[in-house]
Length: 319
Length: 230
Image (tube, rainbow over all chains, first blue to last red; front, side):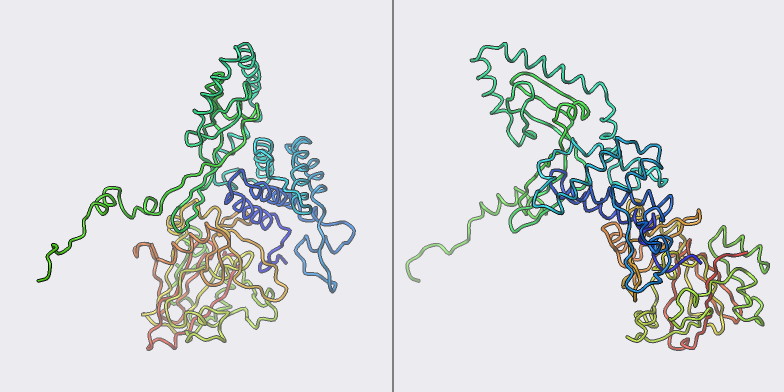
């Protein structure tokens, strides 16, 4: 008899739904925060388990006790104090490598590495995901998700709020032309080295002044090491923090273009930026006053209020 | 429309079937067995004291009935819901049979198409809920509002027995609390005469019961769940 009432915690549906919950937590952080990476690793594990459970929940059962298989099949425990045990994540990935043709050794290798990061984050004092640029793992994460989702009959559309950005990141992995950006960087570096020191210093000084934060995201030029600017396109949700006087909004930006005015290097497109180490997501922060954000008063109204003189009785000695 | 084939066809295409004074000499179990395969609730909830056929009478709200709709809503209008939405797989059909009915108490139906129109796709796709509380050794897992099983898609909805787990579900709850549908989109059904029978596809329609006036409090309906029709 199928259990209509009780959820099977090892079913593909339950595991997928939990993965979805964790992905939502991931997206509630900005991409350059450590929480983003941690939640991604948790959601990836559950998605992998959902894929294996979709073939059969019994594949998740730790084989040392037959009751684990009974639990996997949705049966109530028949022994007192029984706690079901499932196989470790590494074994889940190994089984998927064999059972899903598209889940290649390369993809499994990335997932394994990502799970190791998760373990280090949870079981040690190291903040593993802090300082780990998203270009190193985010495209591969989405690729792994896409393969696992396909095995469940689903797509990125069923899993992430911004499937378009996710697909662009996946596409960047296969963009062979992007690797040619190295040539460009080397060429600009050579021209920079051949300049006179005085010219280089002047150009670097100008770049310093130009690359101010409000005009873009500051990054170091890979050719000449001068301050340069990255522009990006928004991805994911906007987080809003309201305090007494100010409202701060933050949103993850995926890099789209780079420009250095010192050596003239320009790079366009996420694939190329990612290929040369400039593909890490960054956060755009905008600060508003409370009045601006909630449209309490216009500037005109504020100016008018400032200019209003209070009405006093005219001075007159005793009357 | 009295034959099972016509009834099954109507339910398949419209999500419900209403048959006036259908074989009033037969009891609910006999009628249900003619039209489909009965889901015996006792087999799934053996210690709950809930029979295969459930008798529904309007009741005042009380703490003792906290596990039932009457416990919270009493004689007031019930919100739109699907039955046993907190089950992993809710029953496919419910059959309501009038024992003693009144014309001023209606069972309203809200089609899935209207529900999907009201709750935007972006919320419906990602909305996750779970049973509002755990009983015994029950396992609580997140569940999609829109679920797929046995190759068919259904919707579970219950403002009382389910709680939202994430932002899309909370948005869906907020939307439904304000009753944003057009009255013309609601299908009213009145179980008034003995034998009046309403069969609802519980995966494709939400339903409710309107307010029970003082004069109609002796209303009596029998309900049985079905796995399949035809």
